[in-house]
Length: 484
Image (cartoon, rainbow, N blue to C red; front, side, top):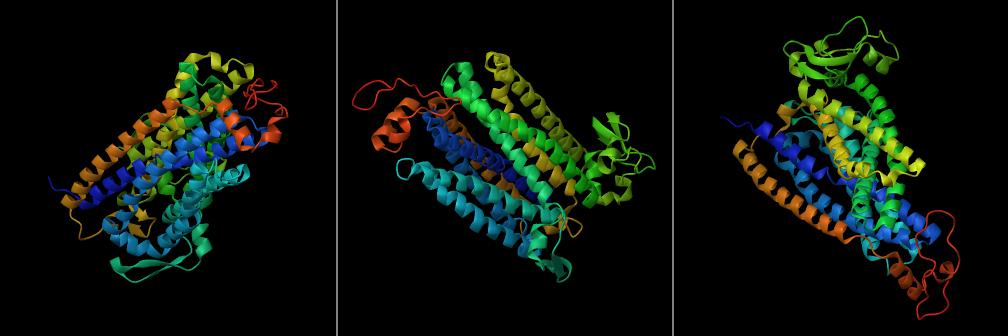
C-alpha cells in the first residue's frame, strides 16, 4: 500500500493538536476559578479559601507544564511538514505567534513562578495579582492562537504576492487580520468552552471527595463555587454557538452545509437534522430526524428562507461530510447535556439536597470527560469542515505540505512522538492522581501559620463576613491563651 505524505502529515498534526488541546482549556478555565477562590480568601480571610486556592494552584502548574511540553512539537511541524503553508501564511501567522509569545506566554509563565512559589514570599495582594495575571496570560494566549486560526477560516487584511506555489500573503492591515470576520465569535466560543472544562474539572474532583467522604467541607465549597460558574457558561455556549453558526453560514456556507447534511438547495425552508447518517453518494441523510425549516429559521429568522447547500459547489470542494456532520452534532448534543446537568444540580442546590444525591455525584465525577470531548470534536468540526482548504479559498491542503518530506519519515515520527505522548499522558495522570489523593492542606494549620507570619493578625481577631465559612472559631492562638 502506498503511503500518502500529505494524509500522514494531517494525521500527525491532528494527533499532536488533539493531545495538546487537552491542557489549554483546563488552564484557562481553572485559572479563572482560581482568581475567584483567592479573591474570596482576600475578602473573607477564611483559610478554607486559601487551602482551596493552593490546592488548585498545584493542579494548574502540573497541567501548564504538560501543555507547554506537548505544544512545542506542534509548532515545529509548521516548518517540517508544512513548509509551503508556512511560506504562504508566514507574515500573518508569524505576527500572531510572536504576539502570543510576547504578550501571553511570558506573562503566564513569568507570574506562574510567583503563583506557585510565592505564597510565603510575597504579600497576599501581590500573590493575588499574580493569580490574575496568570489567568489573563492563559486567556491572551488563546486570543492570538484563535486570531491566527480564524484568519485561515476568513482571511482579511492582506494581499497576495508571488506566483504558483511561491505565493505568500502579506499583511496590509494588522487590525483587519486580528478582527477578521470570524475572530470574535470563535474566540468567545473557545473561551466559553474552556471555562466549562475548568468548571466540570473542579466539580469532578469535588464530587470524588464527597463520595469518598474526604475533605468534605473543601469539596462542598469548591463544588458550590464551580457550579454557578459552569451553569452560566453552559448557557452562554448555546447563544455563542448559535451566533457562530450564523457567521459560518455567511462566510463558509459549504462548511455549514456539511455540518447540517444539507445536500440540495431548495426554494423552501431547509431542515435541521438532530441526528442521522449522511450518504454523500445518494445526497441525503439516512436514519435522520429533522425539524422542517429550522435551519432556515436559525440562520435567517425565516422558516422558508433558502439556504445554500453542497450542490452549489463543485464536488471536489466538499469537505468530508460525514465526519464534519457527526463531530458537529456530537458537540451540540454534549452542550445541551451540560445545560441539563448543571440546571438540575442548581435546582437541587437551591433545595439544599444536592450533596445527598450520590447518583448525581457519581455522574459529575465522570462528567469532566464531556467538555473535554466537546472541545476536541468542536475543533475537528471546524478544521475538517474547512477542507479541502487550509486557507479558505486561497490555499488547498494538498498544496500546503512540504515537498521533500517522505511518507516513511512522517510515519516514523508519528510512531516515535506517539510513544512519547503516551508516556507524557501516563506521567500526567499518575501525578494528577497523586495530587488529588493527597488533597488540600488543613485550613486550621494554614490559619496557625498565618498568625505566626503576622499577615492576617488583625483580620483574624474579627469575625469573618457573612457567607460560607469553615474556619473553626475555637482555634487557639499560637502559644496558648484564651479561646476565641
